[in-house]
Length: 384
Image 1: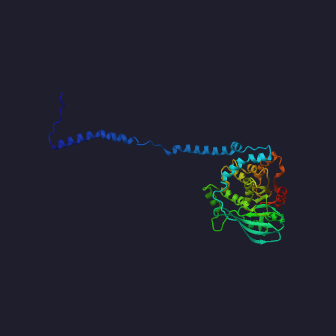
Image 2: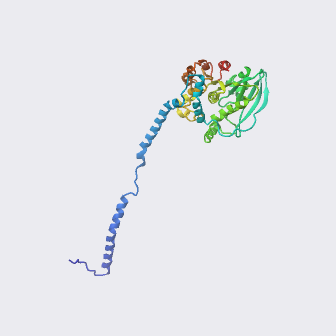
Image 3: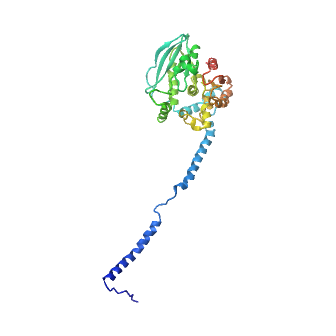
């Protein structure tokens, strides 16, 4: 059937019809555009909705750290002591020593200079002759300190490394009464021992107050640490000192206070040539800090696995069967004594298993944060 259409009477009617036809033709397009505006181009979500997932991640990692800190399985796998003999024990500790050296970046990278040690006499007194000694150890780096030959020398004599503490120096430990070091340096000379008292970095007038931390942070980026370099400042110096005709290379000891007590623990752990060590006012300090607040441990003690594989008590296994005295002051801060008292039996057990109890002492002396001459030198004389 034919479709009837309205007749167009004039130009206005024709224009209206055209507009109507155009509008009708646009209706589908407009409808489509309106529909598209309601549908987003990409999937979206409120970011805050996933905040609980991040909180859960933090809780998981915190729990993981605590679990790994308490896990002894890695240590037991790494170090399996053989108590069948003294030699067997020392051999069984080698893998543990290698792991410790690797954790701190020892030996430090860089070719050792082919340069001679230098000794410049700076003074003498009734007991000894004093020298400023310098030993090239790394590219552009020296081990520097005070070297003392006792006047009582008649034959080869033992060598004592006397290590100052944090913020100190060989001069502070030696001159004007020795401050809280007491007779830690001259006491050795008085007993006929040759002494090397090295300088370690704690402050430098032309550098920022935190220069030690800065240097340590930068050293870690090149594969070592300030601990490793400062151990090398001792062990590489020993390489040169034992060439001297006065030094008995088979009789080397080390004593140290506070930070020096730290080095009197870790240096013999690395270098078996050190036959007796006295670590004063240090043992267990970082373990105590770690228990209270993990990140209160100073940065230079935060080397890899410090609290899981290389705590103070177990590092003693790298000194055993050689002699070790640990001392702490009865009136020193509890943080420098109490945790050490808890750890000492664990350290002593390595000696007990070998029936060498007399080679380990844990001494609480009447005094504060200072070196106890009486107990230290009696122990050194007994074992050196």
